[in-house]
Length: 423
Image (cartoon, rainbow, N blue to C red; front, side, top):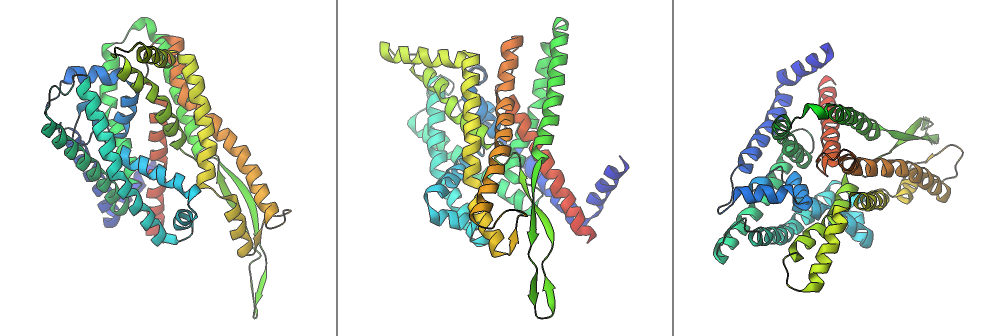
């Protein structure tokens, strides 16, 4: 405890660290203030009911930092920017030029890559904003807005999405940690008082054993997330000795840390994006007069309502997307080439193709563990709801994973800043 207080004292006594921390806090205050400014023409009661019964909007509400639940000017949040970043990373598979820009061109290449992601964010925000406004208007939440007012609202929420993206990048540059992750984190944490108040008002002493089970499971999930987020598989690496004049370089031994959870929370986001569309489409077709469309709507809503079938597909998609995203972001062939160029080798493994095959073998094994873990985290709230019959958010595991991951990353960044100050 004394060490923690000493670090806090150093943070607030060092001018540079204090400025970074205060900048993050100020940015989050601005974000929460903007999240409370609604667009005009809202039926609040219908909005709350609709969001509570729609998992798709529940996920978007999480990534908007709670802005969607009030239809604020930040109702899109960082969702369009996250989608554009995912699209750009997927495009690196099909475009060698983009792959070289992202992985080989250094800081300049990454800046160009980020600029392309920002440019794609604008049309994505327009499409997503128009779709949400059209859906909400159809549900009677926005009332009878004119076309001009619809266009004005669309312009405001697209501008709000770009504004929050800019604030997130400012936090990354002038603050501590990843700005986009901190914004999502702040939106999730901001919902805690509401969740606690709802729990207090709906508390039933007869369900006390169930609540204790929920608490125990929550603690185990947090412990599991910490362990899996920090878990690494070290691969020993030896640098060959090189004689340069009268100086001998190399001969050192180190290791390559391969993270067990390489993909983070991205596979869950992918799976949610696919599996939550059936509910959205089913609700959209529900009021149609065509019998075929009504049958399709009933089938989609039955699939969403069948918790065990939905959970099975959810787990499978998360499992597959974990492998897919790891393959996109981690290239064993390039790693093997870099080791060979730098005169390094894995003891007992020949450089080149044999090294690549060895790294791929290890990566497959640890990715399987990470994929199973992410799949269980994703479906656990659904399973708990099916067993206990108590309503639980389908995104609860994802939110918990994001919160714990962001806190761990923030702690690492602060410790790195403290270490730099000491040196």
